[in-house]
Image (cartoon, rainbow, N blue to C red):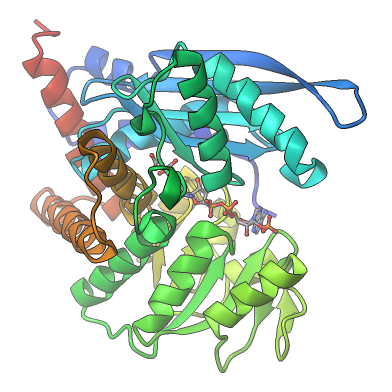
Length: 417
Ligand SMILES: NC(=O)C1=CN([C@@H]2O[C@H](COP(=O)(O)OP(=O)(O)OC[C@H]3O[C@@H](n4cnc5c(N)ncnc54)[C@H](OP(=O)(O)O)[C@@H]3O)[C@@H](O)[C@H]2O)C=CC1
Ligand SMILES: O=C(O)CCC(=O)C(=O)O
């Protein structure tokens, strides 16, 4: 198992690494390493048996220089204040690297949703929405889905907000169901950007993605969509995993069929014709492409020594510790960072918000075309920075581009002598 690294310290180290290549004052960099504010609250919620349970919840608003705070809400027992701060910071630089007009925010509730009924989860979500109401808004802070949340939770939060505000405000949250103001293509958007990043990476490195072998850690929204779309490019998905462990077949798996099996049984384990393997075994398989799509810190410095993949496209936020980055850079493994490779989610959230504001809805084809344009542009900009400044890796290149954009917005607003 990978060692725990504090994700907030990882974020700060990533910013420092990039700042070394930028002509920006230290005091401004310090500001870019810390959240503007963090809401911490305890939700008291009635359970089905009549008892009251307390749930710790957070919303971090990291930086709003480029626009309203934007980022998902996670339901997970491992949520901490520092994790939410890190995730909100990664949102700032993600929105900047794909150049959409948002700052960064993130929220989380300390809960394992597998242990609660739908009614209990609805009351937890509505209670959080009540706490969030003074802090969020169409032009202030716009939540979205993350781990263990999706359309259902977004619909509940929107409904609570609109009821309390006595208005209609679909743009207060994104990732909603289509009939509730959602956008075509949002469910698949995160995995789609991972596929586009992998496709561009193979092209850039002069390698063929057709026939390439691929392992995917995490088989939820991001991982399962990335797997099926990468499979559609002709690659061979040989291993996937979830919290129950992994499955492997050297001849390849059928990504869509594995998802159907997981939907039916609750996990990928036991899928016919596969060998089982641990998550660490999956992460160190000899494959061409590795897609970590679960949680932070999946690969630490020790495990990185055993990684055999040539290319990594990060669908998860923060799956590599800074020590893992050092080892993989040294070993010549090409890592395409989270703030590019999973930026499709927030990009299509932006499209959803634009559609909500205009009350004019796009076709799925238009959404996917616009998303492809944004991700390919961002990829090209990142690679240009990597080559021009002779940077050590693509993560540093992404932060160099993103930090400069945030600094420009701050500077142009006259905030800095
Ligand atoms: N949803 C989105 O739009 C976006 C998500 N992301 C990031 O993508 C990552 C995954 O999020 P998402 O797909 O939405 O979340 P989901 O809840 O849909 O899926 C998470 C997946 O990770 C698996 N998982 C959890 N813990 C482990 C573990 N220790 N080892 C292996 N697998 C594990 C879960 O397993 P199980 O099914 O067994 O619980 C599940 O399959 C996160 O880092 C998230 O922040 C980034 C951008 C946008
Ligand atoms: O869609 C969004 O606004 C944010 C998604 C998210 O939380 C992320 O990119 O990590």
